[in-house]
Image 1: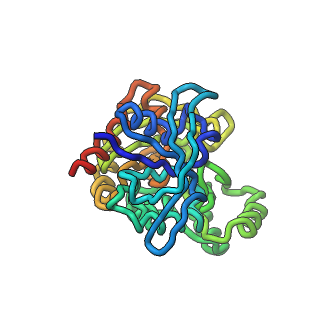
Image 2: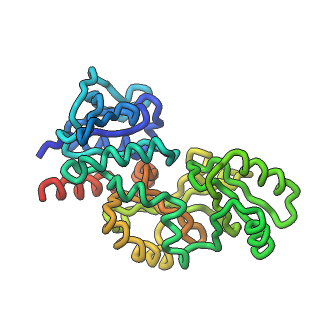
Image 3: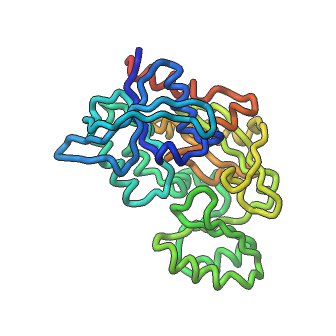
Amino acid sequence: MSLRVAVQMDHISSINIAGDSAFALMLEAQKRGHKLYHYTPDRLAMTGNTVTARLEPVEVRDEPGNHFTLEEGVRTDMSEMDVILMRQDPPFDLAYIAATHMLDKIHPKTLVVNDPTHVRNAPEKLFVTEFSDLMPPTLITRDRDEIDAFRAEHGEIVMKPLFGHGGAAVFRITKDDLNYGSLYDFFAVTFREPWVIQKFLPNVRHGDKRILLVDGEFAGAVNRVPAEGDLRSNMVRGGAPKESDLTDREREICARLGPALKERGLLLVGIDVIDGWLTEINVTAPTGIRAVARLGGADIAGRVWDVIEARRQG
């Protein structure tokens, strides 16, 4: 069975193929004989209930600097596709939300991965609060009095934007940090939405584990260890991937989350766990597939396509 697969992504010329999960999924799809099409979100258009995009047939190669060939783009009715991978990176902003509304028009006749309605309804740092008992103490607000009280209770805290990504603008504030007032002012003028305030977990220095789930089931994990002198473990910020197994606590977290992810059609999800505490549920464009494979772990891209093909056959 050959599927027509459109990939909504940042332009393929801009990606780092060593760590890009969308590219891993494209390589696997091509290996299985599926026909790939590339487009960027700004190419979407909608007239009534018809959604189109200028699709460029694409071939991919695992060769840095020579990783793709694009053919001439053709305006195409997206309902003619069998599968759409919605894989552009955040920010999760109004443009992102608009794209989910457009893709809602054709899903599930055309299978959109992940389900656009539930991507829209599961912003990563808010969806996780449905499992607040698995999280470190967390406050969502921009109110100074609330943050002051939280800081007084917990001492060291982390502040980050609610819709941030890739470790951008993540700050650790110590109990007596003289930069706190200035940082509050910076956040107040930069981010209109509430912010995430969390108790600082000192064992982050031992790693922030990225755990990948496919159709609600554990598929693989990698421990991301922060670079020397940095709080952030994101691999785009210099975090080093290390091979990792799951602890009993992490298996408990996966078991709790799995049914909710499966029910929502969130086929590929990455969760972040620090010292046994769930901190984020990433549903937009979770990374880690290639890092897990390089460390000798599971073929997660293969598992994703097994599930997609089973759904298309069904």
